[in-house]
Image 1 (cartoon, rainbow, N blue to C red):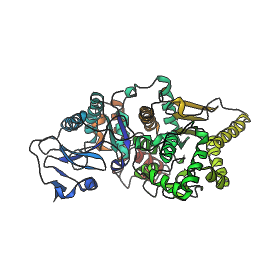
Image 2: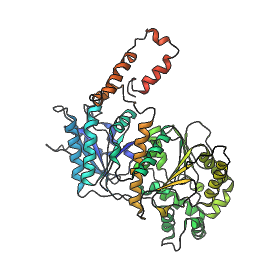
Image 3: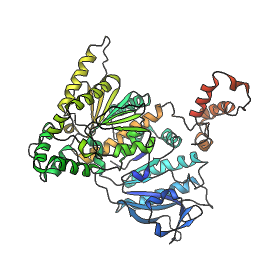
Image 4: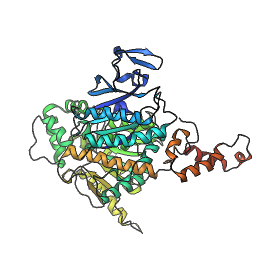
Length: 505
């Protein structure tokens, strides 16, 4: 497959990738926002923030010291002499194209991944012409990803930038999938937009971070290949290792191995769906990191074997948390000691299966306790006066061998072959389609409509242009206008804000 353009929301600095493009001006000045990625002794302070001390002449980009295994490249996207969005797009594409030879692929991925923000919209002159920049940048990134066989991640911070970019993408951008698979992705996206979706995340989602799945983790702990491995026997194998190494030591080793807060495109794509109810068997910190990038650290609750007590987005870590080695569930003794807590956790899963459409991502479905819970749900659903013929959950599997089929659960395999890394990448692309479909179906899908920063996007759209003209009358109502005294005005004003009428956050 050719390279793919991912559109993500979240914190670019946390993304595990091969390279990051940092925007600057033609004087090689950049804002302090990027300070954490820089070798500061190579920069001087400037009115904008920082200026590269050794400034090359007539270069279109310059490489800095690597940061956390990622190449850092400065790209001028602000030019006082040229305010042309195509100049910006061409410069960014050239910087990515130069990576076509020699850019390393990080552990867990099969293609290099280059990440960048919406360049030029900070101090770059396009803050008030974001529409023109997006219209030029998006096709340029799609072309360079396809031509260089490099994956590109456009990481956006503002909701309005995200809705504007998603509105410009075409439904033909996911040619890797059959029509039936795309229909499933679009249905899942619409469910997410309507808050009908819950998430259950397994180890397959963290493969692009270089983390092992269950078998890989136990193999590492064992120090040699496992004979006759099966997922059902994993707790017994772990118990044998605990008996040999000591349970506390084993838990600490597992916690150290999985205490990763980097994120992959999959984590950002799923966190960006706005799903409020999330369950995972993973010990790592990646999904919390992704959620904090969109919701803030106080915008969600992380739970390890306890239930939510607040009406906010929650993540239930049913097998424990790498920050608390004693909470990790791995061995048969762990399962026995925590039997009552696990029953409560399974009750949560059963409730989600009954009250929402549960999307399993990268989970093997091999757990006998889960199979029993799914059977109970099937029996309850069969008693309904008007039973639904629809599947009550969807399983996104890396390949057929990575998941145990369950009646009533639609299974979508990314690949027929057991190529874990290739399948993990295709899963990310499938999630990108779900994210696109959700953004198009969400009630805030036009959050940029009335924001003048995106005027250029509507120049050739007579329908939206006319609608904006009509709504502008309401937006411009004076504070003393009698209409504001109507009992319905609060709802009208809320709608106008949802469409971008209020100042940018």
